[in-house]
Image (tube, rainbow, N blue to C red; front, side, top):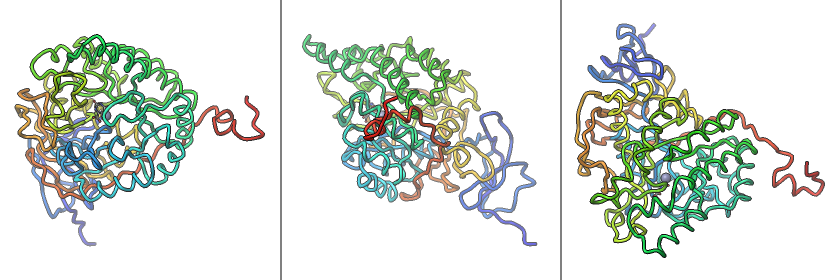
Length: 476
Ligand code: DOR
Ligand code: ZN
């Protein structure tokens, strides 16, 4: 019998899973993990990587990035964005549909897919838009291969109109039957526009006026409305960028009721606060939902640890430096970069004993993989899974700086911050795409991911908008 020879064996590292931290070797073949175990039972390998002193984590899955292409490439494109991801230990990104054109049709999906396919260093999913004007495209978009949908209930970059509640209900009815998850920007548009206009009329142009316009109830109301419609229809939802302590009891309530709802928060809400917006460059922190008062941080940390909030994503939202400036806060672009620094920031929380490494793996890899139907192939280090790995030095210190960013967005709120814990090598399907903070992978290596969601579980199907349009429909 010929001896098996694999592509790579990684020796000397500590493999981290959701439930364990183990000294183990990892064998990689054909882009997949071939074995995890004691070094002496590893097959022979063409290449050996020494990971002595390093921790090996499943690659980070960031389900919320804006890579801006097509249409807004002065802010970012698939190559710069995915280089940033690779350098930050992120092996899969889900990219948002508020590009130009938005991903509202199969044709626009295919346009983005071909761009990503030729330019991305890391694996990717592409969201389809759930808008009032494209309800008839939701099913074709699923067939074409979107990773899920994005619903903008609150306005943001791109000014995509917020669908009315009737359209949202009909959209949820459709996606409930498809089984894919819908990510929701949960802010109440009429309230935030009303208050913004009141602030403008009163001559308020300072950074805190943005927070005042989008005060807590703006987020809480939209979250609850989304969850009620999700419960009614059986649609799976994901609340993006949860910023608000006041939302947490409602999240617990709806999860306890069995609503299939997952929730993310962002490092921005854990590390930055509205109090900082009064300092120099305070306008840089403008984003939607706004960075809130520091009093929200502790409850959000606790909710992450107890699982109320499932995961950390980044809402990586790059803009040109000039776009992040303005005399009036209303003229400053919303959003900030993050895909490159989220892992370091969360490792710093590990160094500060706020969470442990298995919890970090749950929050940044396993939970996003589970929520979006990738778990098993991604989000875990086990035989048969994709060899998406990030090697981290948990003790290494670093000062964050805009100069080191691969992203085109150089307006950087964490400049000067000291972090403990650095990704030193990133592998996507067995290939090294970043080394020592530099992206070294090839554009075009990234592949689109295919979600395998559990069977769809639609509810109240006899009274959906489509059902009641049937001539013989009985409305109960
Ligand atoms: O501040 C934000 N910017 N929030 C979002 O939800 C979107 C993002 C963007 O696309 O710039
Ligand atoms: Zn976003």
